[in-house]
Image (cartoon, rainbow, N blue to C red; front, side, top):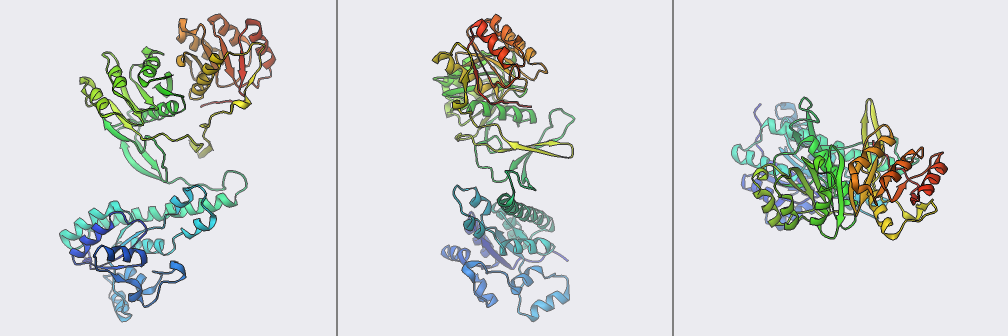
Length: 522
């Protein structure tokens, strides 16, 4: 049969966003609106005629609102098949009216448990019972019934009703798919909450990840690979996924990976900071009193590698910084920052080659980093771990050499230790004046990483500090650092040859700190 005319809608929502306008449009199109409790009062206050669902069912709301819509006169009107005479005779016999549109969004369980200090009783009260039942019933009978589960769907539904008096089967199929995805995600969140309560240890026996596709990308790491960007349901912190793009071409898979690393590095550094990332490793990073100065220092770290890089900031980009970035000869793929001054955007987009190309990503205010769970796919499963994002407590640090670092060197060591954890292992960084000047990344031999970092630093190695993400297994790297003029070293310690490494530092007069924590990044 053809799509049935939408004559009645049942509306029961916790999120009232956009509801009044939608309901006014439905009423103007001749749709009768039935509603419950708080939703009915909200619509009534907006001057919209609403039929009380309890008057229709003859059964009052009970149990402090826990029981409202679970009634045969409601579900019969949703589940009846309009092309089955026996169905239509049955509902007519029992004074049931069909509902062609159901508008429901669920109690905010996910948002509730995300709040600090929420009690178990508060969480349980936000477990919706009637809502998911209404959603599933309408989605099951999508041949005849439209189901709206999110305010973003209102406009399209209303447009079709105003045009034809009904919705298309194509739209109803789409709405049903989105509805089942919503109830599945809702149930997963509840299941994860209870599993987390009852599991022994920090990891539940089962876990679920709910992702929404945000964009289909041009391709993956390479042109022959397809790729897409998904957003994590419930994520509320500043990130690239929620960022606003102010300028430039669409982001690629590799752009997103590098920008995420650049933002992570910049937000971990003190003062105004800039990070320069190429192939997911920093080739420059610096802190300074001003963002412009930090940018100059960061890009000077490895100017050759910085060509075609992405940049991350931990402060709003100002005009002075933008003017430096617009210097002829600089080529930057993308920039991520908490924000951009309007004039700074003007400077960056007025550069002829950047006008429609350089990506400017505004993520909003950067909150304190909190440890999150990381998921990494391997064939047949997932690895899950706590993210290595929390700063190390300096109370655990130990000066293990006869010579102690100066206060100035301690400041440099803190900076170097903040950066090296973001470099692929085996990781070595050389830094000076709160700026990265040499990086050895991803080598199978730590000796090779030391050699590369010192080579990159060149003459700047003299008087610099060297950071290592894991222990030195042998003293050979200490001897190489001394030859280059390294002034201080920071590393986790923990090798069976620590005594030999410490002795080598004492021999050449280099102070060394053991942090007690390794920061591998694979």
